[in-house]
Image 1 (cartoon, rainbow, N blue to C red):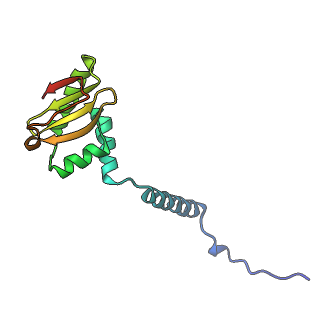
Image 2: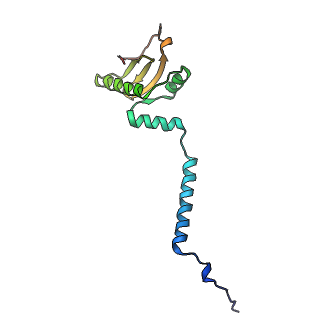
Image 3: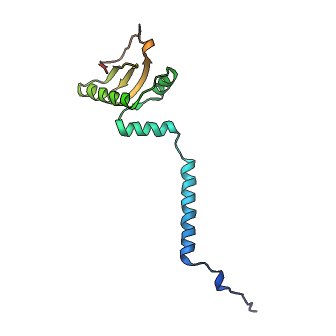
Length: 136
């Protein structure tokens, strides 16, 4: 038994239209996947700092900066980078960076700020396990 099928050629879409629709769907799916794996701002900022200046901030240092209301400007970050570079050129491994706003303990070999102390907490503090100090 043979059945007849009604075929309407006008219902077919042009190939370009089908391809464009498939591309839109692929882009939408990629956007959804990117949104699901999006990094928080903190992570994006740290990546930018790492790439731009080569100095990282540990989670502990970020907490200390935030809890002690120490805000670092782009200029401050640049000064920190320069100080770490100078300490590294002298063979330092762990350094105290004394700035106008704060003091930072930095692992020079890892190029990582380990902790931060604000100026009001500097007095009568003892810094141990450092092999150098840089006045910035």
